[in-house]
Image (cartoon, rainbow, N blue to C red; front, side):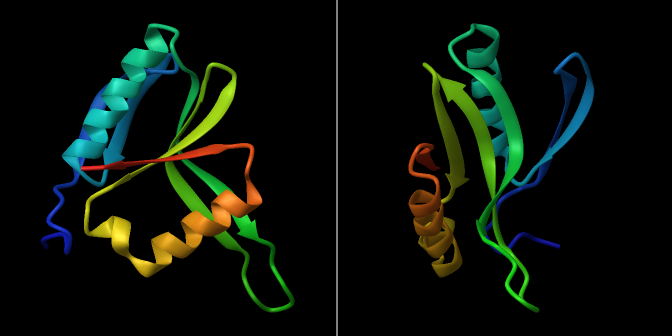
Length: 118
């Protein structure tokens, strides 16, 4: 089945964080960004690289579930926490994404939110 945004899912095999890993990505471009960030981490320009980190935007209320946001990449650069969302031009315009981005920036003003649009 084809992805509705025409992205091709892919897999990366390698050693990361000291062990053999098989990591699935939603697109080839997202995998390539991971490899760029991994090189930056190996060269000590960033640290603490994490994939698919989840942040709570709104807590659970009575019977309602909590609203959460899963970011593509999280890392520390020059002592500052950074989250990166990797989006296509189409997915960057989706209403759900825009609302979650605004909630994230409101709830976590100390974390820099970067969008990589390709």
